[in-house]
Length: 305
Length: 305
View 1: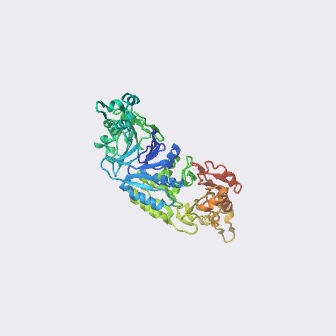
View 2 (view 1 turned 90 degrees about the horizontal axis):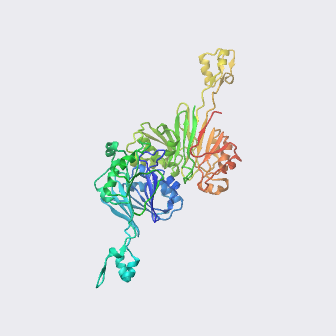
View 3 (view 1 turned 120 degrees about the vertical axis):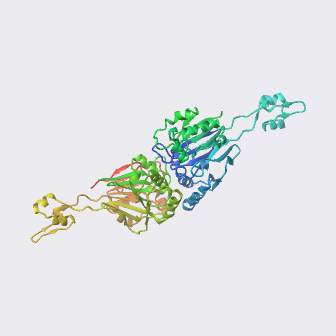
């Protein structure tokens, strides 16, 4: 049951020869969520082998160019490839004129619906769900309206231990009760849910927080995620510049991961001042050991605990 | 005296893993002309080592996405790099709302002037010139308003043979006469310009014709160019598709080069149906031997005859 992240671009503002601007694709059980779409995203997508036409959701954090200049090309290419399935785009309201412009100037020949979901929440809210997965959005702290995302598996139903079925001669109705997480109450006994049932897996989750300066609520909102992606545009020594530009340093990202009790921290959105960001890793791990630097074209498997 | 072409992208409509969408930079004596700006052009530029900030002119052929989706990123990046020198953008009038949108939504922080030169001519006209170089534009034959370009050195003044100066004891005024291409008329003799003077070089020229279906005037308009770049989206067998989409085949491109008496033919803008276009070369050379396929990141020196 897939939960795989393809990192397509790790540059901030200015791309480099090694880094494309921000774009990622998360595959959750075969459903594809694109997160941000910087220039060249479609080219990186093609290299990654991820199928364009299977992307169902595009989650945009904000309308700075380095997060959206790849969108027009991507939507156009999907049209040229004959897409008919609708696509959802989640974005702040500042995105409305940009989508309007695209549809007016480049929309001829687009045979699929673009469902624009306007983000306006002030705390995490579900913006999409299906049987197994939910997508939440929440505000971040940047120079323009910006939103972060959590994509997570829903809590699975309980499973009933086979030997409990035999031991207690459970009826179908009682099995249903246990699956819902309740105890089975008989005239003469109670069968505890904790004895007869179990969760088959802990739901996995991925949070994307970019671009943002730190703020107190964030760690609560992404509490317990399996993998937290948090921008670390700057190293620790550049904390003043980070604050001024409403970005984060390595220590900001690591502190958030620590406070949130995340499983793993991935960082990206590196300032172009630093051709090599290897030195970021020590700074991150000094606060949060399970920290990793993402690179363009990384594939990250997010496994069950 | 530089006359060098950097080919940044050779894809048509759909980029491939090997080909970025159309973009080129021509360096004429240190002055940089960008021609078209498909998605990812700034990334290819960075790889090529060509300096962004030295680009003075952006010549857009038409407003199909594969020729302009890299423009917003490029202009933004120039701003972030602190550009103050103005830039000229030559484009059809259909470009006006696109530039307007860019300035409105992404123009904050752009400290340089963008001089938009609207192309409306019905035959080749000079749209820019300096002491040594001129830029001409002319209409092409595509589904939307499209223009081709010629960038050429101006005809140099004549030089006077040193031994003629000695032989005839030429005065400064007479040298000036010869430099202007005239004969020197003395009371007792005429000194023929053809004997005493010579052109130091034949001006070099480059023509860019994409996207276009063939049409009769084109070969006349690009007559005698040193290097002709002509789109060859399709191979010969796809002539019906080419006609339908107002594109050219290999044979169309080669016939144009032959009729124009071009020095060399370069082709590009390859259909994504063909992962390899090697077979295009035979088709081209069957009509015009000095034909070459361009590839992404090619550097072409255009030398004096």
